[in-house]
Length: 214
Length: 216
Image (cartoon, rainbow over all chains, first blue to last red; front, top):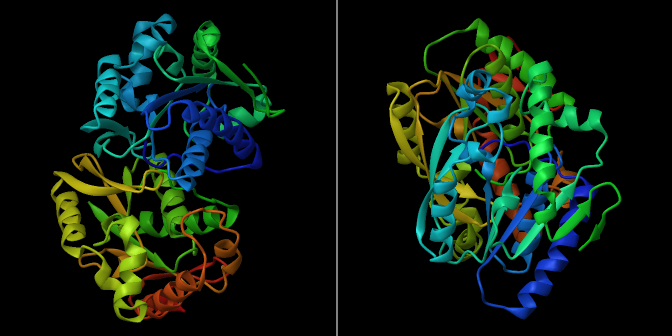
């Protein structure tokens, strides 16, 4: 994802530190193994910011992390999505909107340390670029996205529990998209789908309290 | 550039609005805008707010950062600079200007182009393929961006690294280790960047006002 507005707060750092500790525990068990981690949570819960903070913390420990944002994998590109969703109805919104074949292809390339071609949305233009990356030397694949809990074989599945004040959430997210009644209905539907996947997580973070439980 | 952290504040938005008005008042098809200024002066933030504001005016602008085009790999640059002497090598010639020119040409022609794209988290250089067909404006930001050939509007942020010292010391952006070497690099860049000020059409002053250079 290009031109995502990443602004780090101490809350993001606290959340990232909790995930980092858990990753270091897992790596102590299997030190040299490539590892896949997912971070899910509601829209505006801080997934992408936490991912960047976590990636930087891991970098300081000489662990290379590539971040995949599932927002890059929608079958319908951003500029056409609203119209498509209006035609298909609110029930069309959910994890089937992702191009899972593409996600799985990129995951396979990571596991085999291969060069891979990834979709990459430019959030300013709304167009989808292509990104060629080499997974050789990348230790961790960090996948963040609303429905990343659908990826069953991740070594760690983190869920960011949204207890964020709703106004703050709306304001933060409005940097990406304009909010209106239809958008709010979309958010509600996405919320329901995310909640339906919640039990798949194995690590929960309460963003407000920086508490976590297994 | 992937994984970059921006610190956008009201001053960026205010200056961005003034630059936006200037750009809308000087319309041109396939316009290239360049923003130069020292490290920490807010180039990328400014490019971001301008591009965002242009979208609201139905103008599709793509920001591109010249830091993606260094000759040296991110992980090797520091050692390379020390080995060859900071005073000798830090500057304009560290960039692949041929590649930057190729991107500008592709933009003008509305073609597909591949360019380097640094991931600040992996510290690798990925390759980004983009289609310029529907892109109306390109905003090139970087230390020496306004020196590139074939730029329509040149913006210079008149703020030195010493005036933004706190930003570097606090490591808020987590980009590079701050030590004597880094300070020397910033000092050298300061000399090099200052020489470009006369090229600018628009100057963003130290207090983030925007003035036209010939009207100063």
